[in-house]
Amino acid sequence: MNIEKTNLSAQIVKQAKSEVGTVHFFKDLAVVEFYEGVHIDIATVKKTISDLIDYFGQSKPFGIIANRINSYSVALLDIKDARLALPNLKAYGIVSYSSASRMSAEIESSICEWKDICFDNLHEGLDTIYKRVKDSINVSLN
Image (cartoon, helix red, strand yellow):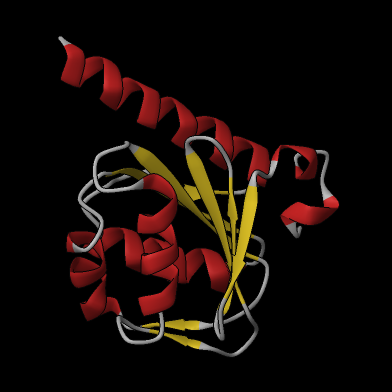
């Protein structure tokens, strides 16, 4: 479900659109919704990465949820480069709505540095990723 059509839409602080999708910014999280049929690689997400850095800076811990409301492809080998561009990214999750999307998310998870990144609904994903961001802050303060 598109996040703008949920009760969470009132909590969106900012939005940024690009040729490949929309980023919905919250206080400590960003929800990315890529458009149908796009190919996501390091070049196509350059603006998205820039928008994330503009909003969160280089040191504020944050999390990202990929809300897979559409079908799109991901260049798996570019995941590590995208991760290096966001050093303060502390948690990542994927919400999938179909078995094909779930399978893609599980393949992505095998390459990703985080485990247990696949979620069946937006609320579960947001709650889990938010807790992981907050836990990373507590760990770094101790």
